[in-house]
Image (cartoon, rainbow, N blue to C red; front, side, top):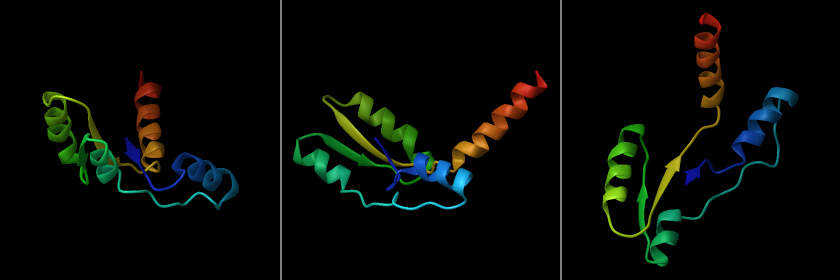
Amino acid sequence: MLRDGKYGVIQHHMDTRLGRHFGVDFGNPDFVAYAESFGVRGHRVERADQLLPTLRSSLQSDGPSLIDCPIDYRENEKLGQALGEVICRG
Protein backbone atom coordinates (compact mmCIF):
# COMPACT_ATOMS: atom_id res chain seq x y z
CA MET A 1 0.00 0.00 0.00
CA LEU A 2 1.22 3.49 -0.75
CA ARG A 3 0.92 6.03 2.07
CA ASP A 4 1.21 9.78 1.71
CA GLY A 5 -1.03 11.00 4.58
CA LYS A 6 -3.05 13.16 2.21
CA TYR A 7 -4.74 13.26 -1.13
CA GLY A 8 -1.36 13.87 -2.74
CA VAL A 9 -2.40 13.76 -6.38
CA ILE A 10 -5.26 16.16 -5.69
CA GLN A 11 -2.90 18.45 -3.75
CA HIS A 12 -0.49 18.46 -6.67
CA HIS A 13 -3.23 19.44 -9.13
CA MET A 14 -4.56 22.14 -6.79
CA ASP A 15 -1.07 23.58 -6.31
CA THR A 16 -0.40 23.50 -10.05
CA ARG A 17 -3.70 24.99 -11.14
CA LEU A 18 -4.68 27.19 -8.19
CA GLY A 19 -1.32 27.95 -6.61
CA ARG A 20 -2.55 26.62 -3.27
CA HIS A 21 -4.35 23.66 -1.72
CA PHE A 22 -6.82 23.01 1.08
CA GLY A 23 -8.65 20.08 2.65
CA VAL A 24 -6.24 17.40 1.45
CA ASP A 25 -4.21 16.60 4.60
CA PHE A 26 -5.25 13.87 7.01
CA GLY A 27 -3.65 11.32 9.31
CA ASN A 28 -3.30 7.62 8.69
CA PRO A 29 -3.70 4.72 11.10
CA ASP A 30 -0.74 2.48 11.82
CA PHE A 31 -1.28 0.21 8.82
CA VAL A 32 1.31 -2.33 9.98
CA ALA A 33 -0.47 -2.78 13.32
CA TYR A 34 -3.82 -2.86 11.53
CA ALA A 35 -2.62 -5.63 9.19
CA GLU A 36 -1.15 -7.60 12.08
CA SER A 37 -4.47 -7.35 13.97
CA PHE A 38 -5.92 -9.47 11.13
CA GLY A 39 -3.04 -11.96 11.20
CA VAL A 40 -1.27 -10.48 8.17
CA ARG A 41 2.48 -9.84 8.23
CA GLY A 42 3.09 -6.11 8.17
CA HIS A 43 6.24 -4.28 7.10
CA ARG A 44 7.10 -0.60 7.06
CA VAL A 45 9.53 0.85 4.54
CA GLU A 46 11.03 4.26 5.35
CA ARG A 47 13.78 4.50 2.72
CA ALA A 48 13.99 3.48 -0.93
CA ASP A 49 16.83 1.03 -0.26
CA GLN A 50 14.55 -0.94 2.10
CA LEU A 51 11.86 -1.61 -0.52
CA LEU A 52 13.45 -4.40 -2.56
CA PRO A 53 14.61 -6.53 0.42
CA THR A 54 11.22 -6.08 2.08
CA LEU A 55 9.40 -7.01 -1.10
CA ARG A 56 11.58 -10.11 -1.56
CA SER A 57 11.00 -11.17 2.04
CA SER A 58 7.26 -10.71 1.68
CA LEU A 59 7.08 -12.70 -1.54
CA GLN A 60 9.08 -15.58 -0.03
CA SER A 61 6.88 -15.87 3.05
CA ASP A 62 3.72 -17.95 3.27
CA GLY A 63 0.50 -16.02 3.39
CA PRO A 64 -0.34 -12.41 2.69
CA SER A 65 1.82 -9.44 3.62
CA LEU A 66 1.27 -5.71 3.69
CA ILE A 67 4.10 -3.28 2.95
CA ASP A 68 3.48 0.25 4.18
CA CYS A 69 5.46 2.46 1.81
CA PRO A 70 5.51 6.28 2.01
CA ILE A 71 5.29 8.18 -1.26
CA ASP A 72 5.61 11.79 -2.34
CA TYR A 73 3.56 12.70 -5.39
CA ARG A 74 5.74 15.75 -6.00
CA GLU A 75 8.27 13.30 -7.44
CA ASN A 76 5.84 12.61 -10.33
CA GLU A 77 6.64 16.01 -11.84
CA LYS A 78 10.39 15.23 -11.85
CA LEU A 79 9.70 11.84 -13.40
CA GLY A 80 7.47 13.40 -16.05
CA GLN A 81 10.14 15.92 -16.96
CA ALA A 82 12.82 13.23 -17.21
CA LEU A 83 10.59 11.02 -19.37
CA GLY A 84 9.72 14.00 -21.57
CA GLU A 85 13.39 14.65 -22.19
CA VAL A 86 13.97 11.02 -23.16
CA ILE A 87 10.91 10.88 -25.42
CA CYS A 88 11.67 14.20 -27.12
CA ARG A 89 15.23 13.07 -27.94
CA GLY A 90 14.03 9.98 -29.80
